[in-house]
Image (cartoon, rainbow, N blue to C red; front, side, top):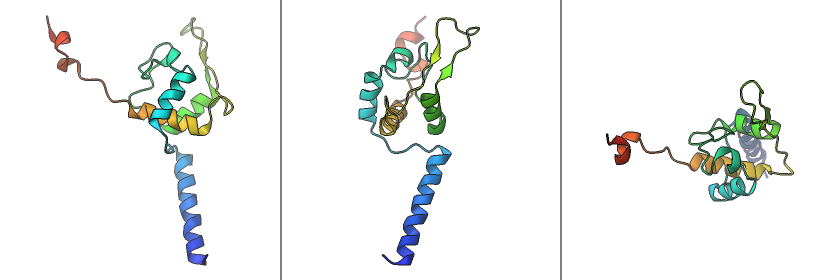
Length: 127
């Protein structure tokens, strides 16, 4: 391989690494992400479409991938003063959810559309 081509490959790799470090989500498979979301029982706290529950809303429009990854990997201890019935988000290591599966879950959450406007739902606009 010539020097110019090698240099281009290195620059592309560094650019991709920098983008990942800044929080851009890696490519993921939304269909597999949905399956992992259910298998890992994320739905028990976040709802089947990330709509929320004791664990809070994840979709539509999840937080940036870097924050999402940190939250999943490190977890969050809940303050007993704010919610006594919920201990917080447990940390999930790569042994439980791989980095690829985490990207898939994020792709699934990104694929969830906004709900319809309440004004567009006839039952909700009836007196």
